[in-house]
Image 1 (tube, rainbow, N blue to C red):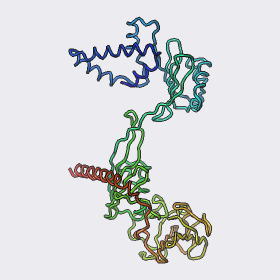
Image 2 (tube, rainbow, N blue to C red; image 1 turned 180 degrees about the horizontal axis):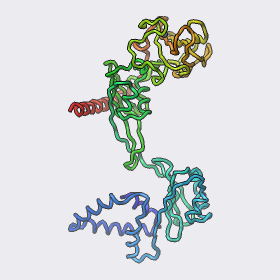
Image 3 (cartoon, helix red, strand yellow; image 1 turned 135 degrees about the vertical axis):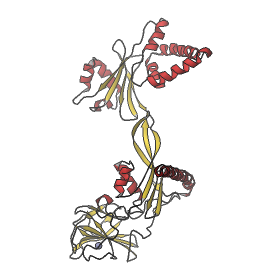
Image 4 (spheres, helix red, strand yellow; image 1 turned 90 degrees about the vertical axis):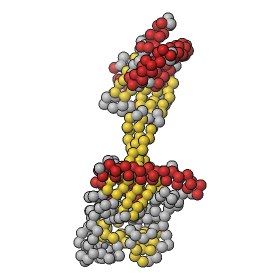
Length: 437
Ligand SMILES: [Zn+2]
């Protein structure tokens, strides 16, 4: 109840404020007079649930002022106007019964021209007095920021300001076991599309979401939900998460710098992507015995095959330099990339190549497109990972890590991480208890 009353008080001329604070003091004494205590607190509760922001509550003040024989009374009216398609400020103001001159005075104070940028669906609140004088104009810029023009008592000018409300974050928990695929499990857990993507991105350095996910894998996530004035406005960051993939557990906690680290402070981000194709584009996500597309044998061949539609983007697994971008009958269109001294990655059977020999490329950069060129039967990416000239399985090889947290940040981080992981563990226990009943 504090906010609307504050607004009304703020809009009154100063001498009224002084009178009002006198009245308020008097009311407070009356309210908390011992014999009235019970009913007073009940009224207070009632008032709290009944008053709403932006509504008109002039009555108590007007009455109080009348009783004191104030010469002028302030009867303030709030108008709430929703912008219609094709509206202009001039049109809005004249339809609300204001003059062009009044509009001019308001826009003069609006140095950033925020009012010129109103969109259909936005709304403007205007407070006017009995003389049709605009006392205040409010325009919500987004969930938290409101642009305010307020009349000065001394002259007809307005002062512009921006009021910012704080987001309130609440922690939510979600978890799921994978039965069909990761995406469906995320949806079943109640995560949004972008949260599912974020989760895959977060663990995508350790887990190949295209090929490594198995039935029985599971995950648990602690994430923020944002509220303004008690109203839900959207999801925030993933705060901490756990992913069990083929019985191996991975944990990630968000640091205040926005990056994710293991509870021990190691960066989740690695020098190499686990998979050079986005997991949502790979079709054979759930096939543990993948046959080689040509030989028909279960593969111990030198690479990994990602079955994906022709045209699917292929990303560079790490920063590096292109050492081959060419075509031959066996590989079709292919690209080789050298990463530092020890590592080489190879991408075969492409339909298109986007980079040239010698070019420097960044991790995640799209270097070409999946295709069916060379000695293949169907569209797929054949990917190879070499360490010191020897083929290694990129899904099991230990990859170099990015920097860990600096020592001075490590201690506070691990304390917070421990707390967050404990929250996940306890919520998982509660969840399991409920589901076993
Ligand atoms: Zn292959």
